[in-house]
Length: 343
Ligand code: ASP
Image (tube, rainbow, N blue to C red; front, side):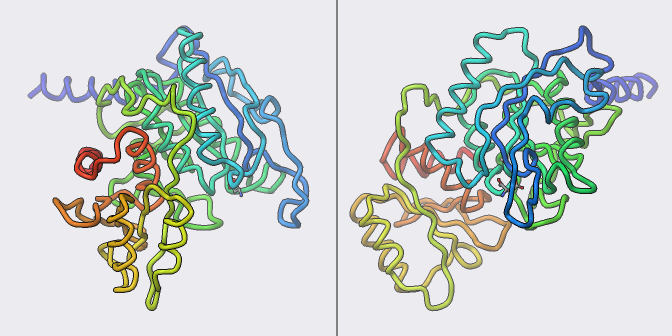
């Protein structure tokens, strides 16, 4: 009994080991890409000024957590970050990790609107055991109660923690650390907007340390090596709603989409008119994945038919996985397998 208690105490101490227990002081690099965390000025009036990352990392007490370096990768709203920038960002991270074996971890600051997409893309494409922690803020840097400094401080804490190794890319917001795969923005304005509806956070983070709920899976390889990929295939997301017709689906297929994600009603449903357009698209070799617009829950991956279910990947996450899957194969059976393996 004693041994069991001791072992349990030891393993929870290991899981919860904060940066103070780890020496020498680790180095963490913060890559700034912009977003509200890097904004000031008359934010709500639309007159935004951009704050450089070397200024944002000057947080009282951060030096006790890690030696923090910074690099301005971009300084834009997240609406200006898309597939081409994702490829550049993942390559930059790979280059830095290759050149800097002593670096403990990388933090990426990012606008929160599309943070979940960039984070999931990095999760699928960055190799090695060292973590990438993506963070941002809901309030601009000059607003009372700005959440940026606390989020950035906690992101550095998480990136510096050796227990973060082998966990891929994570999102740090509002004192909680989430898997990039599971996290989604659920509220347009509140600081507690990021949630992982079906799976919950991986850890809570506070000044005492990073408290993971479970051990790292020790993941070391990226699912997708995009070092030679110049462009990702076009994949569009189409919403379903009562009375939706086939116009949007036919239009994106006509524009060259190689894949479609249907943000379906309920368990991936769509109208008869949309189903007809999906059949036509599939007959032309367009890969169609059905997800749900409900915000959580599963759409079964399935074993056959015109569409592949996204499992519990939301439409925007299913799009990322489908883009990467299509960069490797256009065989529907292989892509179905990829979705099944990513559940
Ligand atoms: N519009 C901002 C962005 O995503 C919102 C934010 O950062 O919270 O860039």
